[in-house]
Amino acid sequence: EPQAMQAGDFLFFSTQVSAGREGIEPELLGNPEFPYFTDSTQLQADRIFDNMAALCEAAGTTLDEVCQIREFYEDLGSFRAVRDEWSTRFGNGAPASTTVEVGAPLIVPGCRLLLDATAYVPQGE
Image (cartoon, one colour):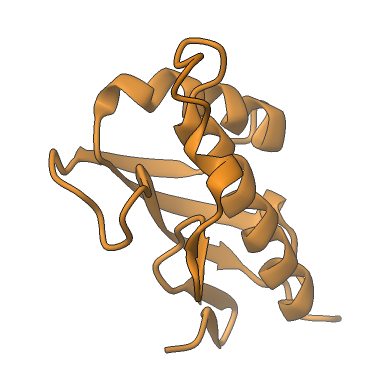
């Protein structure tokens, strides 16, 4: 499936996780010896937003134009850490969101967050 598909003025993202063809990168799993130092879900959110920003740029838009995100968490205990990443990426202009705790492993082992999003693509005048 494509990473994203544009239809008219909208860019629809396919399932966004912090994994590639080889699975999740070890540095995005956090350090099990220091589990309270860095939340691995925030690291994964950072990578997902980097990927989404690149897809937006390729489509002629930016993360500022993301209008809706649906979040699926393995554990809602990471919600706050991801919201900290949101404030860095979106400031006060955060998109509408739906948040769901799945409570089971996501589609790639080690992934703790899955995002589904839609962005607006302004058309040239």
